[in-house]
Image 1 (cartoon, rainbow, N blue to C red):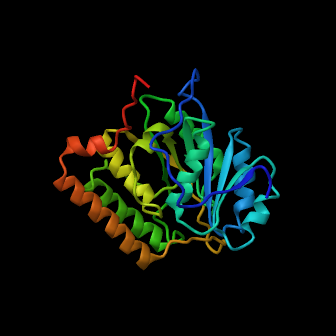
Image 2 (image 1 turned 120 degrees about the horizontal axis):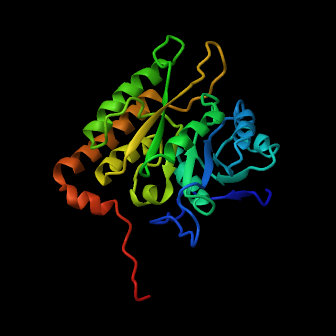
Image 3 (image 1 turned 180 degrees about the vertical axis):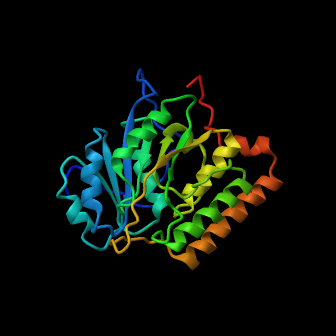
Length: 273
C-alpha cells in the first residue's frame, strides 16, 4: 500500500457538511471521483484518460476481489481509497466525496466500466460554471438501440418516473453516473442509500431542497460484443429501488415540505464558539 492508497472502513462516520475552504473560490475547483468494483478489464484506460483532464482523480476501490487494485497501482498520479469489503456504489461515492472535499468544491463522477468518455467531463464542467450552482447530469445519447442492454433501457424509464414522483424534477436520464455534484450541497442532503439507489435519492432530495438539476448531452459506449462489466442485478436492485422510492414518496406525502427542507440543511454553526 502506497501513500496514495488508503483503506477506508465503509461504515466510517460521514461528515454532515463539507470542510470549509478559507479564502478560496467556490466556483472552479473540480476533482474526479471514480467508484470501481472488479473493473480490472477497463479501469486502467479510464483512469489514464481521466488524468489527462488535469484535475485530481480519486479512485475508490469498493472491495474488489479481482486485479483492480494491482492495475490501479500501475497508474501514477491517482489518489486511491479502498473499502475492505464491498459496501455499494453510494458508499464508494461518499468516500470519494470526502476525499474530494479536501481539494475541491465540485466532484465529477464517472463509472469505471468504460461506458463514459472522460474527456467529455469538460462539457459538464462548462455547464456547472454557468448560472446557479446545480447538479449536472450527463444525459446519455443513443440509449434506444438494440446494442444497449435492456436493463439500462428499462431502468432509465422506470427511474425517471419515480424520481419525479418522489419530488425530483423531470429528467430524461436519472440513472447516468456521469455527473457533477456541488459538494457542500450534496453533504447537506443527508442521503440514506449506499448502493445504486444513492444516485436517484440524490435527485429526489435535490428537488426537496430546491437545488437545480441540469442535463447535458454526452456520448455512451455500448459496442456490440465489446466486454463490459456491470454489477447491476435486475431483481435485487429492482427491489432495492422500489424500497428507496417507497420511502421517499411516503416522506414526500406525509412530511410537510418545510420539515423536509430542514432535513436537507446543514446544521447552524454556533457563532459564540
